[in-house]
Amino acid sequence: MVRATRSLEVSARIAALATEVGPGAMLPGERELSGRFGVSRATVRKALEELMARRVVERRHGAGTFVRRPTVAQPLMATSFGDDMRRRGLVPSSTLLWWDTVVADTELAAHLEMSGGEAVLRVCRVRLADDEPMTLETLHVPADRVPGLRGEDLEGTASYYDTLATRFGRRIRSGTQSVAPVVLGSDEASLLGVEPGAPALRFVRTSRDQHGEVVERVDSLARGDRYLIEMDIMPPGDVAERSSTLETGDVAERSS
Image: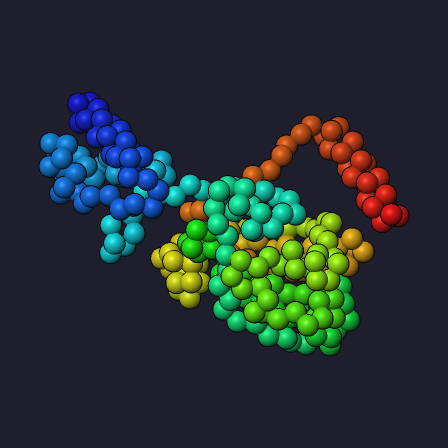
């Protein structure tokens, strides 16, 4: 009982230290913390394990123990990555990995609601917040709906949704998105700055513009240690009423 109480006390003191040094900072090693708090390394180790379970700190293999950065909530709605990050006080950016144009096979053509054999633009980027990797994303879009668009146009701070609206007059109006838990392979983990086998969330999103045409199919891997899913819930009756309102609004938009 005394040992458990002591561990909780040390855990609270390390948590206070984590708050003091701030997110992303490296904490002193077990030996230094043991000397600072006058306890055994076993007690420090147990306290750190408790803080890891509470997602206050994280261990990085071969590097040390760090204060965890805040988890980003991913709303299930048609908002851009950049808007989500800016709303949370983070600076969004992208690193272009590669881009190309391919001929759509039957499956991809079906997802994009286009004829098979037509050209599809693919752009693969690492999306960052405050220069830290957050997601690995591959965009697919029918090339004839974004004529002249190149991968370089979506590098750095450029937003696909903004480019879509200002350059092509297409605005995202609706879409569907699925989410599934996965583990990262070595290449994916390296690009996202985590260990191979780390948990991640796979988002697959298909979005339509104001004309009802598909203007993106995005397959992205989001770091499991930085994302959580956020959604609104409501009674069934309210859902039906809201759906009716949205359908009416969609008709008014298409008629304008």
